[in-house]
Amino acid sequence: MSSERYLNHPTFGMLYEVSPGNEGRDIYATLYAQKMFFLVTVHQREVLFEVIPYLDARNQAEFNLQKARRSGSVDLPKWENLFKQTFL
Image 1: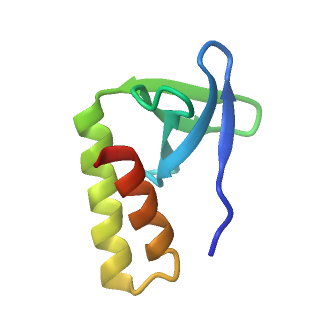
Image 2: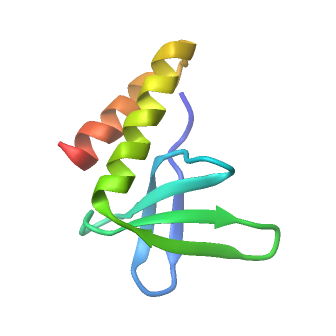
């Protein structure tokens, strides 16, 4: 199982990865409040944070779960657990 991923946002503090996204952009949530979601793009010399709505984050996380189920990913339990903790 992969390790957890965290980033430090300059304003909102620690973020944790909720789901991988499309095109190298991953979805992160604030660690303590768990009410703000960000689409994060990591480039070689910069990290870009884009605030996204709750439902967009949830839809992307559900899409990731479906993809992990179809492919038989060994990370499926990790993503299911994160989905339950974050969205249910």
